[in-house]
Image 1: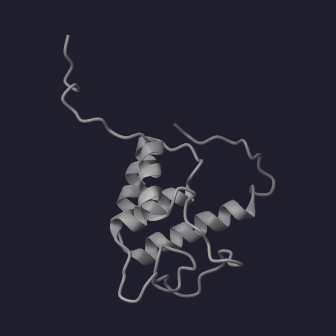
Image 2: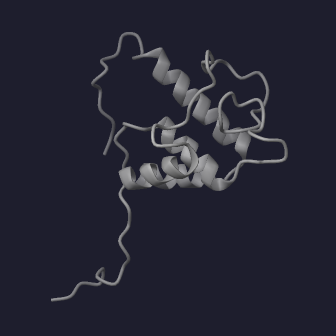
Length: 127
């Protein structure tokens, strides 16, 4: 018995996508922060999705959609993602660098900030 989906190519899982992006753009351990640097409030539009966000990796080298996708996936590493989450990450990666970099910075800062005071760390989302 055949199904209509047999002809579709293998779609990578979220974990496979993350691993591919990180391996290609940031190394197997994710993106490294410059020594002694931690994300802080942004006071101007970021120039890159790579820390420290305020300068390009190399002169004349601008972030591509794949860079933005890799940085966003790195920022949510270890968080359960649904198909819609991944779709939105792809959509955000297709936008501009300042928007993606601001979101990456916010996600990293939120993770460093710990749980929201007065809320359970185990509170679930909607499915």
